[in-house]
Length: 245
Image 1 (cartoon, one colour):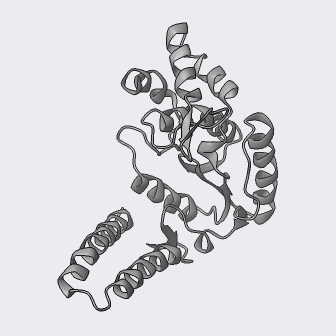
Image 2 (tube, rainbow, N blue to C red):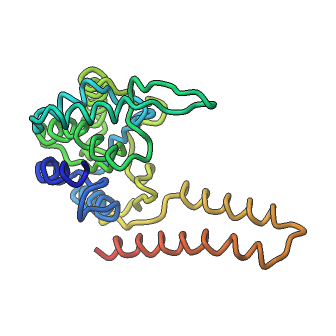
């Protein structure tokens, strides 16, 4: 289903959408963030959607799928996929909203629903980056950012019936907000750096492994540390790759 639907929907998705798409990546999203800020858009509307994949409205989503898919058999199959129950505490529970976590079709369906947001932002002429439900809009002033925060939150909640996490969303300087694990320096031509929260998560994980390693064979501790540190090294090297662009 994913292989058939992707060529139908993906070509018309926004150029500012980077998540779970062929030949697109988080590196490209972070690089675009840097370009927007370097161009003078030094305020960011950082929007957090609360439990997005658990709160997708099935009727709204299916209406958007039906814009491009006419075969009713396919539409029924997607609907059944969305409404398939799940086991919770050993009991079968029906699914009335949301998409299956980890399902291969779920990211495409998320992009189909959120493409309405992308089109609205493009219609208004805003610069933005979206990676699945991670969304930032770049403006030249706080006042403009606050207007966009209000209007975009209303659009998400009223048109798409999603919930904006007001506590985690903010209008702020981009160097105070992380995006996909990275942040920017305050320079006129900003440099990319690893977000403090990402580094803190790494250090916390290393501390947990070392704490559990007390009294254990040192070889076992090293074996647990290696994949964590290798993952971080790969993460850091990807950051340097973006920085060089």
